[in-house]
Image 1 (cartoon, rainbow, N blue to C red):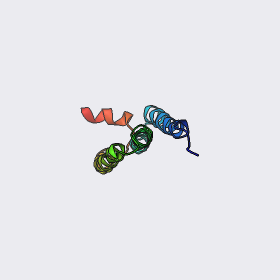
Image 2: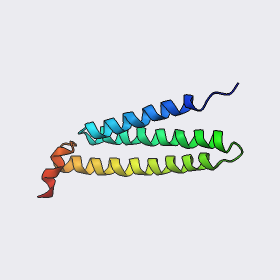
Image 3: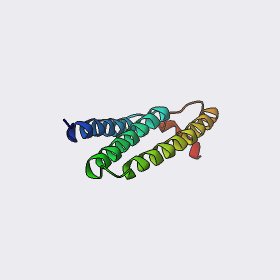
Length: 103
């Protein structure tokens, strides 16, 4: 008995929506980064599910997912390095306080 596609797509949609909500409502850069990673994980789950159900013999969705995970890891490392440097300068990582650094 095969599990229907909607059983995989609903958690992916929930993860993506939680990530969007967290990214929009948070002021802390670390929380925004976590929300961005949550959105990327929802998209990765969609890649795998659509590959599994639409093209079962192909591994294209899996390869896209592995590539997206690698990009997300590099993006996280770079973002944490930027956040550490911002914290050293401003002693705070709230996004609204960063507008003061322009002047």
